[in-house]
Amino acid sequence: MANTILITGATSGFGRACAEYFADQGWQLILSGRRSERLEMLHDQLGEAVRQIIPLDVRDREQVFEKLGSLENVDVLLNNAGLALGLEPSWDVDLDDWDAMVDTNIKGLMYCTRALLPQMVKSDHGHVVNIGSTAGAWPYPGGNTYGGTKAFVQQFSRNLRADLLGTHVRVTNLAPGMAESEFSEVRFKGDTESAAKVYQGTEALRPQDIAETVFWIINRPAHVNINAIEMMSVDQAWGPLAVHRKKG
Image (cartoon, rainbow, N blue to C red; front, side, top):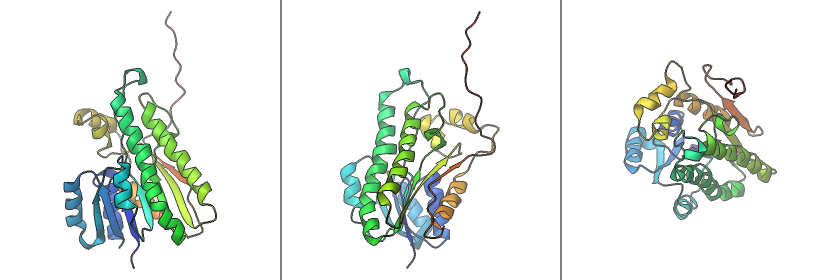
């Protein structure tokens, strides 16, 4: 029987790329996302590789446990659903944006993990791959709450491994840097011009790069756990520490 991966946020970006890549590798897919029409289109595209599509808002705890809690024989949970909203300084931010990031990137990831882990622990088999971000380790102006949510993903992944010691359930935090997808369009709320400027003059990571890395992670020998991977385009790195100099 083919292995099965459950991908949250499967309708665009990293999630869609992973769905396409894993289907090509002969895996069975359970695909979830908020946009049911996109799930249907992806189902039509990938055909028999799709075991099930699940329209789902990961922020809704009851919905997550109702739809995911009874799933069986899931080998990999890819917690991919997430978003960034805005780049305003913390004193000028829209609080609704902060709430949306916390509810999706933290609470949604927690709910999905809690819903799937019992069957993995019971079968003593499985892998949770959490999509974090370099923003979880390195700050930048306007990254305030988004970076905080991804720092949570990093530490949550570590603590899951501590809880799971003695089982064969693996956990990985995959933290990409700048990657060209719909991510920036969401961040700038449909402002495609601002989104395009993020990648202007660079060769950013691509969703395909993430998909190939996820596949490599989960195909290590069963005794090997990849705790974390941080990856960037060669066009991105760290700068010098910022220093504010007074005039005069």
